[in-house]
Amino acid sequence: MIYEVAEIEVRAGAEAAFEAAVAEAAPLFERARGCRSLGLQKVIEKPSTYRLFVGWETVEDHMVHFRESDDFQEWRRLAGPHFAGPPKVDHVEFVLNAFG
Image 1 (cartoon, rainbow, N blue to C red):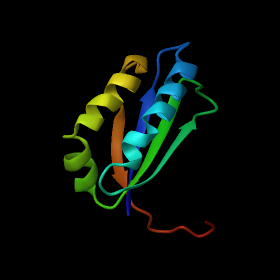
Image 2: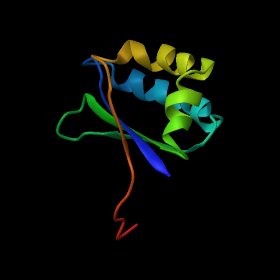
Image 3: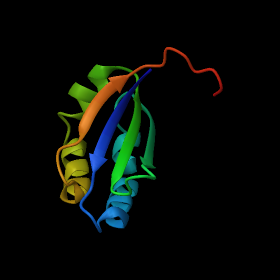
Image 4: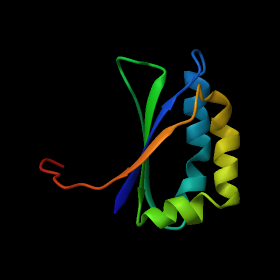
């Protein structure tokens, strides 16, 4: 499994609305081909910065099957208005997971 890690800066004051939008969008990810998990974290030192973690079977499941879907467009419609700028997205895989 690989993880999409998206760092998202939201507009100041839009934090609660962004969190609600991600919760509303969760079913879009849940039904996406190859999607295995979804998590959202808020950076304590920068409360307008979030990290979205999405577990995918393959990079292609994210970059092709999801990104080219109507559900991706709906995700962007829900969450996009709260973005302060474009998300920074990387794909990662564990090379060590010692305690969990």
